[in-house]
Length: 223
Ligand SMILES: C[S@@+](CC[C@H](N)C(=O)[O-])C[C@H]1O[C@@H](n2cnc3c(N)ncnc32)[C@H](O)[C@@H]1O
Image (cartoon, rainbow, N blue to C red; front, side, top):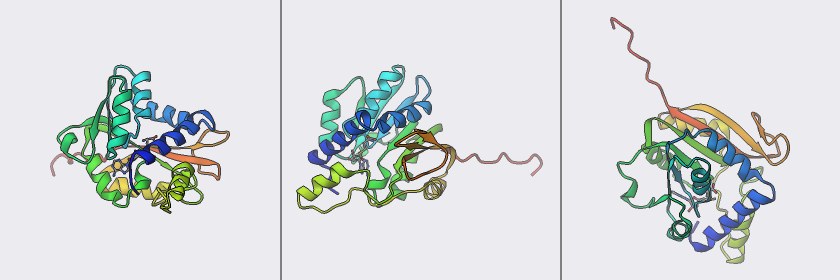
């Protein structure tokens, strides 16, 4: 998939529909905000035009919010809309050595073949006591929640589905486990009532999980 300005605009349009038509973007945002303490350092990894980053900064002004993406055009748009947020290019070493209290991967993992490598890299950006928040679509048919970017590709003669996988709960927990994280909390957002549930249904839009570093059991005295 080519993450260029056309993709960025298509993803932005999809987010717009998700905010105003079906409103699932606002339900997801509520769950993401629940994971963020006041004053936390937050990284929105795969931020596209920075809508999620800006909402976090608006709702939690004491937080130090940063965004990162591999698409230079998306970063240019995000920087233009700014709002007190630092943006980093995820392709170079800008983020090396930095850590954050909360790292968000919202609708990113399903785009990536090398998910294990990406999670490994991103987990290194989470502070010791920090949280990883991951949001992945729960599609019935892979790509059914990415119709605008998908249709745009067809128009351009590139029959590429932007989503390379549908990640279910078990697979996500196993990926997290592999990079040293354990599940703290999870919930599904739904397109109709109830907008948030613990069980996945046909109407589910996404799965949001919060994870923290696995706790190492303290050594038993005398051993
Ligand atoms: C569907 S958009 C999600 C935007 C935003 N996070 C949201 O929830 O609305 C997917 C974003 O992931 C970015 N992306 C894809 N692969 C990535 C990678 N390996 N590292 C960082 N960002 C990536 C794309 O450039 C795009 O901006």
